[in-house]
Length: 116
Length: 116
Image (cartoon, rainbow over all chains, first blue to last red; front, side, top):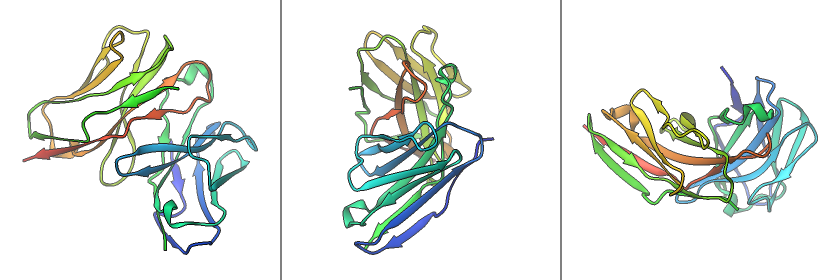
């Protein structure tokens, strides 16, 4: 079974802090994704990566950056946290191969981040 | 850009009854994949069912089935013999077929309650 592990289930930080959310997957997936989930808005894509050191902006990248130094790890960084970044953050991974397009994304358990 | 619309923010069903969750999408592509994900209170996103657009036969997985109407761009989920454990957020998602690194596009979700 694919396992996607997010380092924290709950996190509380202060405005202006630099925040790191870590995600690790154990199935050698090329693709990794960061979403935020807000009530009434569903899942919105922040960034994704299809290879080490590669990254692509999603729908709402402003205020975020990412790092993919190793294939299994994808970090989301809030450079200077703000209260409007209080949300649930979900990490996901999937295979890259075109023959695997029917394969689902596998999700972590989410990090509920509160910015005070 | 592709969009996915779930017009029912909340639904409820009596235990053992059948419920249908609606999903429509907008795309100019002819080939793509569609998914339904379930997110229970534990927050883990779980794949429920998937459908390839080039397949006319509706996908089924035990008590879960879809009604895929390609011309109408509709992809509804039917849950038969509803159980208390079916209570969750349900997300409809779309993926283009052009490359392996294409992220999913999610709807805003439908919260399903199951009444004992």
